[in-house]
Length: 415
Image 1 (cartoon, one colour):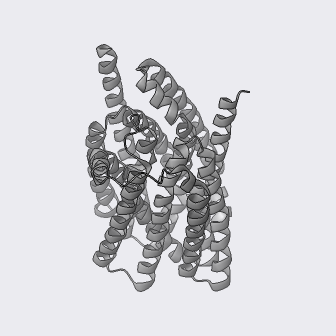
Image 2: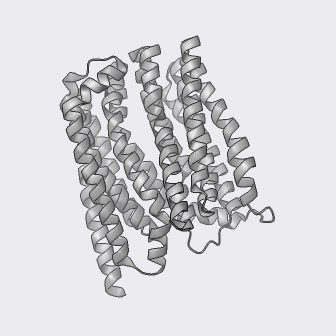
Image 3: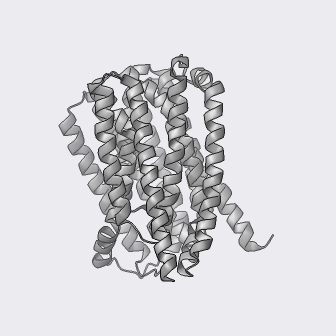
């Protein structure tokens, strides 16, 4: 095996491990809260984490995707870092505005605020991971995520067990992430890769904010679409139902995680193919990824039908057998989302973002009205949340499939 293949494999393994642990931390946190505290507290944690994730997309703005696929490389690392610092500050301001508007209880407000800080640190770390990836050190970011995942979950568990106070447990995770960000992400790795002679270019910062605006809106809308049913539940139902929906939705996120595992190591390859105008090769690669995702999704739905509620009940200590079909339908709907995500990556790589903006705006409108009507107005409860999720993701899948097919057809005709 030559050195290039070894590096690819090393990047793939560590990125998969780190991303997997970090993505599953919300699952482990929710299990701990349910077992140590109670289902009402778990419901608060579920909606707070969902909100923090939406705010996280604001801090991420365009994310690592555009940073890594920057073909011309005219924008320097310091410009990306300065932009991320600015978007993180904006995120914290928006979090404060949200909490002022909602007027939650003191406990719920504190949990929301702490989780927002946690996701803000995560967003800032990601820009340093982009620096690592552009220098063929993706495995380093995977190692960082692995450290944060393991130590963070352990700290959360220990503090919650000792104090029975979710606020202190969340604070412990923040401290862990901050220490690793400063010592490992920056001083040990990134500081050596960033050119100290480069100056922050305000025009470049504005250029990033302007050029990647549609990417940000798409990401923000995408996360909102997935969590729209949770906000409908927050408006119309109880914390108990919020927790239950969180339990049955959590396994579906495996689809998103699995897709990211497969796609992320291919970002550089897709960028090179586009630069060389190898559109057919791009289509072949993405088609193979889609087949793998569909196969994994079908297996997941089958596993959920046979053992899903029993397995989740064992984990959370809650009887979920009444929600077997909800679980299967939600996981199935995430197959649509996973394929749409692959198309998103492809269209973003070739810098088609406005059409995605249109798709996400339409999908977000459907998600907002669909979830509120089905959950609230029609009183379908958790079934309404499930139907809303499926309807929105299926509609989005159709729009993305059409857009991707048409754009590639037109591009190939011009060649």
